[in-house]
Image 1 (cartoon, rainbow, N blue to C red):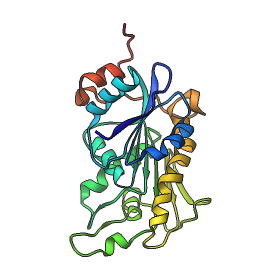
Image 2: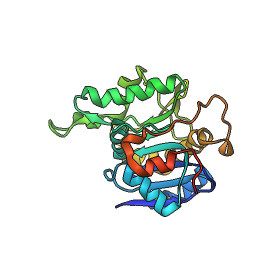
Image 3: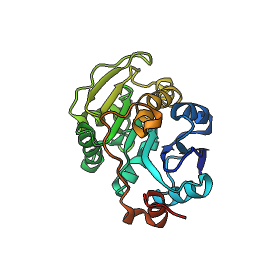
Length: 250
């Protein structure tokens, strides 16, 4: 298992953040982005365990018993982990999708629909969705059988926005409606450095700017944030029942 504990956090209940395709070199920046109270876990792999096993790990390694809010972060192919959890019925309070909303080429309906549903929840203020993309469209020009939809194309299809403006790391173009934010970063058509910057800079910055305030009153402004939602307990087993049950335990 590639899961690791970035920090245990403090308090009961406390927020839980799970980040996918995030290496250990980013751990100090994640701790700084979320502050000391949030429980933060990460997985350096693009595929791996589902929610029940993840929550069992959090209970065993962090002593986590009650979760106030859940945030899911995906970078690059790590967004496929977020998608798999969402399709399995997991409902988080906040999502950060960093340059990873790819789909097959051409995209299948289900690869757009899950994200479109999140988009509508965020527009209604029922969840926080923060997505970023570069302008790398070379993926759609690869040979047949290897091509896949670019992140900007999938976000255009899911949001209905043109997303034709982009800016540098210090001043990206931002499109917002309700609790939905899309950050558009300039890049070349093939640009490994721009994609890498989404991990080392964009993930920590957007985590601190958006996710941290959303997750709890001890972590920043909470005006307009909806009441906490629990995960559907029947889908994730015993440890989810223990972690998300608000009743006191001895």
